[in-house]
Image (tube, rainbow, N blue to C red; front, side, top):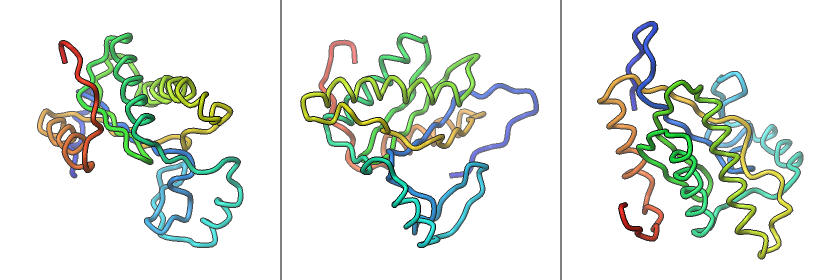
Length: 175
């Protein structure tokens, strides 16, 4: 998916945010990996084994109830902040969000979504003995800026249609 470069000084139409669940994509992963400065690296089995040994908790894999809770938390936060949510999809090991958040930095938006989603996850996992989990997410994530309507439409379609079967959300009046 190619995204058009911005016109100098222009504000993005939206952010395309993606982040992974804790332990789901470690440095050295066979799929390749991205370092903290954005550098892309190929598979490094020894690095992956070291990262696996250093994990403080087991890897997260979201079930259906948790996926719905994450999506509902992000949707609710957008309503509270007055942000326009174009698309959200929580998968078993990652989350995609396309959002217009005027006068907000992409990194701040992602941090807020992670925080709200964490609270929602802790609220529903208390009865399953998982409420003591500290890490739900990897650090950082992808924060792409969208500058043209065509790219926005492509990214929204990707999130809604190219992630496998969508999470079945209960229908509500007005949705």
